[in-house]
Length: 358
Image 1 (cartoon, rainbow, N blue to C red):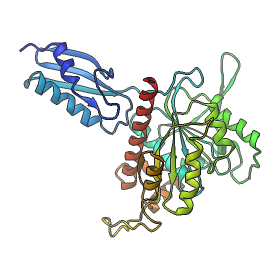
Image 2: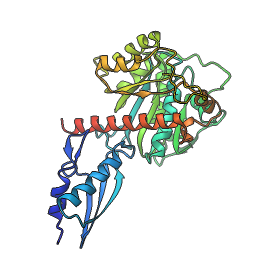
Image 3: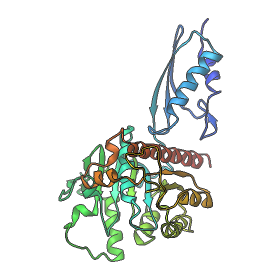
Image 4: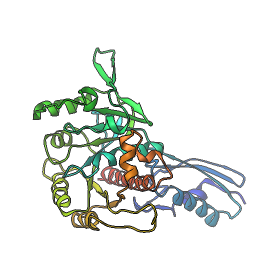
């Protein structure tokens, strides 16, 4: 039997991306089709390397060709990714997606979440940067073992000086903590803080990035408004803990992104410190701060619930040592972060495609 391009494309039109609600051919995800006798080879180009359904879509492609074209076909699928972006803009044109990590309240583990999400996305093959925009308590220097580190600089052909982000664990990093004495408080006024944050975006040599994660300060202040209104934001992730006092502040933080003049997509809610599992009882979960608070909050606002993260000493200990827990890929906490990172990348892709079709 002679296999033709038309037959293969017709078969693959039966494979639908469950998030984007269109078939892979219509979405232009099938590239470089080559047929030689019974060998069918092509590239499946996903919208993110962190796609949680990559294996499912690959297997669906193979099955479609075998069932609808030829059972004897030798189907070879090369899976790659080309990360989408929400809009084409000359501003920060080399950064595809800026993702804000926010919380209404301090102490919920927002910086830990931001750091581990960045590491997980980079491990999946994405080009990732991380800005520590928490002017009151910058955490990146500690969490990445970079206390006392100072970014370099270079001068462009036009005579402009650019900050060179520090690279570690495959991530480009900038923090206001790199520019201040870690033992001295910095009394920031609103305009001063806003200008400093803008410099981390505009005056840094980020190069090409798929995702720039921004760790925001707690609350709903000047920094949030400055970043939200100054740069093209792909979406915001909300971090909370199960307690009612945290949820009350988180509601305000989430609602801020929906205010007139901001209107940033909320990619979902993460519940940190959800439960405790003793090492000697690994099958048990104890919801010591309450349960389902983050899930109920997500349902109330009609946004995805991205998942629960356990209360584990190893997570904070790893951050204190400058080696975030996601570097230990086999640990349960790292796997929980990986699942959440995939869901965030998934939501970014969905929003980007929806914007492109508007």
